[in-house]
Image (tube, rainbow, N blue to C red; front, side, top):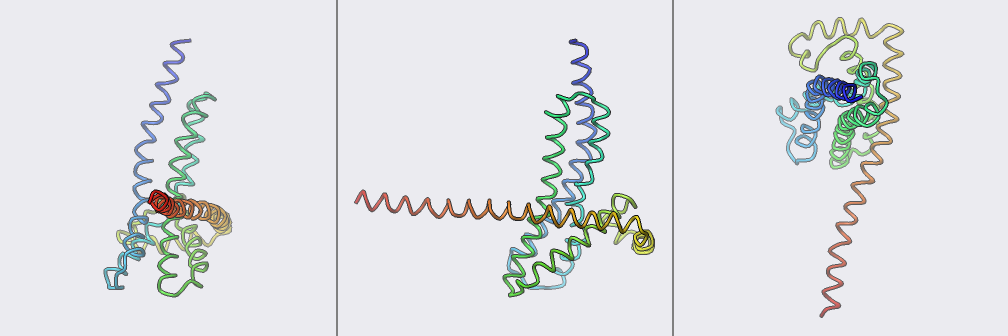
Length: 223
């Protein structure tokens, strides 16, 4: 029993060690557009050529955030490797959940920042359209990344292959079905996570506003 437990734990650690490299890398790629969204859309600055370059880089890397949803396929392989209900439930699933949700939350906050920018420049009516177009572009980007193995920097390193092969292999019936399903998942999950995120921010801001008021009322009573 002890030997079996040691073997199981070592197998779990081995799986986590293998996963840690791609999880860390994919999360790093997911947080690049988040950082860019703060720089581009939260800080007041003019739309110079540097801003537009940052905007293009932002959209080139943005699909990496929701792309983490597709990494669920690695969980299936890991479950086959470990074959322990307890280890799968207590270790594997929580790790995958945190990583995937962190990546998608980066996507949600990035789009919230874009919406904040549009609201600030008086274009609030464009927010829904921006979100829908972004979901569609990211659905294509996710397909290119998962099935065609393209990367964000391929826009620079191999733009010809990206456009020719990417467009050709996207127009088939099966790719379009996969992209449509991905789009629907992005729309639904983003709608849910956006409301959760904004509700959390709103709740925290209200509690911060209430706290100084209570302190002021206590000081008046003391006087």
